[in-house]
Amino acid sequence: MEKRKISTFFSVYLNEKEVVLHYANTKELAQEFQFKVEEDALQFFQACLDIEKSIENLSTQKQESTHNQWVKQALKGVDYEYKEY
Image (cartoon, rainbow, N blue to C red; front, side, top):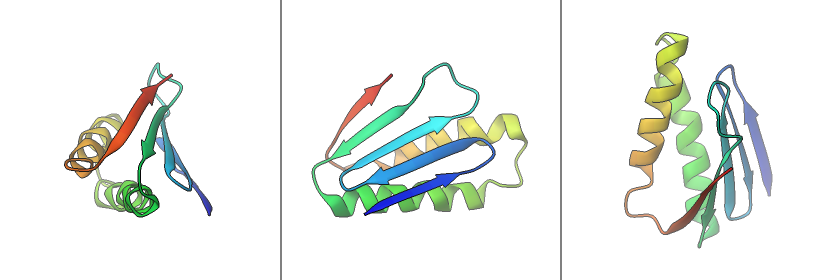
């Protein structure tokens, strides 16, 4: 099951147990999250989308950093491997 979402300040891609997240204004090409369980990957992907909706009224500069902070909170207690490239 593949899913993809592209918004004004980030894009997120889900493929089975992998989620790749990219912010428009960062130096990293992408953040890759490799989950042990497909359900965790799907929940994380959905959290990325839900967080976007809740911060849409913030300024463009704040959206990216706020989204990234909240995404990290969504990962607490979840088993995953992280790569940045």
